Length: 599
Image 1 (cartoon, rainbow, N blue to C red):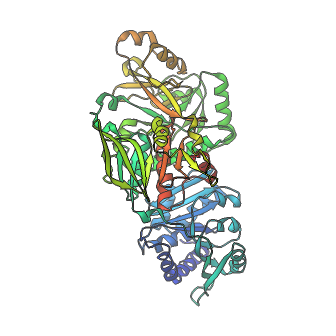
Image 2: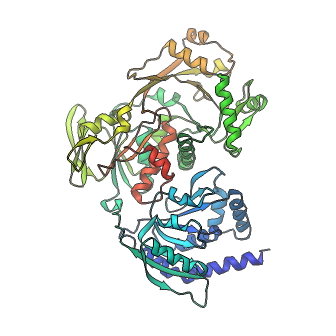
Image 3: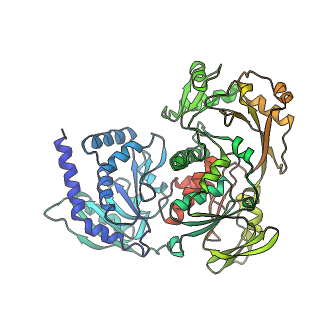
């Protein structure tokens, strides 16, 4: 039986939105001539679930994507409130929220009620000034409370609209004027619903030109997991994507496709550093976006058991888990006995278990991402990007012959790893000209870009009795069998552009594995069945990725320097660039974005 007080509250708000539906829908059509440009709505209310449900109903009456931004200052209360409303009103929107509600982890979480069309961008934070952490432009404000309003108004579109509770309208008007927004119209409430007021405002803020006015067409240079991740995110948003890479002219390496495997495991630090927070955001987004291709990409949601041979590192990890007090669904401490049950092999030390970690075959992932029907792959080596008015042209080689692509692009993503800095320099994009006329380095973050080589061992599973059931992590990693082989890694050699498989590298890897194994390294080496591979990653100082648009060369984007975390950053970069180009709220906080921007 429905709670009568809740029923009255729910019905009243539904009537409010029914009454103001015409005003809200009419306003939404004024923000852009592009019918697919998104509308962003900020909700400042303790009852944001009710507003979200009503807005979802309204959204279905038009074609424009809508994205909601709001702050939950108490996770437990938000979870209880969602359960309460869902128990009484099992609407499609509340049902999807109930199924997808984020874990109680600090940071920004995106929940897509309808993929890329209607999303909730929820920041779990107790500080109302946290509105400044959102990156985006808000068109519409739903105001039931004043807390955080001043910070939220800083995100305002030049001509926003407001739906405010009548008790909040007078202080709202004062803050609108304080932020140099002039009240344009006021629609007083009717007899049907006398608790809310709708109004619009205007300001002298310059209108930001939408990126999509130039057309949803883009080129991505590089077909690794970096380029493929960006291409996939844009293709899912309706963009036509051309991916260029000379690798498309080569026959596929079937053995590498079968045996190549890696781990996507959260980074954990006691101070919850920028890199740890980015890792968390990247993995949560990857799990969400890769659901549609998990079988094609051979993704296993098996979790990671973090162990360590170094007692100091092991102690640091266990203390970090205890200090952060994250939910057990994200990470939990396990005894040697529980660790053995999880891994399916004997473990003689405590560990930290990450249930949401994944085992992923990177080459199969890349192949699956690039199969999207909006993506076209072309064999081409880009040696120069030429700017022509408001577009760019790619110049280079195809099958050893100099060639210039006839098609031009308003946006280019440079995602060719270690070659990114060289390409930008050859194109003249590595410098900017100051007002004084002086030329200065525009990409200091790429000054330290260099090769970080590594090798892995590929071991027939019968030597290790089938291998572990989950990823074993720590200083090295040991993966569950794939196609009859277990992968162990890895080595890290700075500045090496020509890595090779070596016995020295195998010894380094073997010594990183914190387990007693049923075979010796010497036996493996003598068997003649031990395989391996070596590769080069690109890395900058601090081992953070470089993702974002060049400030001095609009339309040129970077997605590089992923180091050994390519799959962790793959979806993250795609969502950052995709959301930026579409005008959606960005999926990470402002301080995290600043830490990875090219500058």
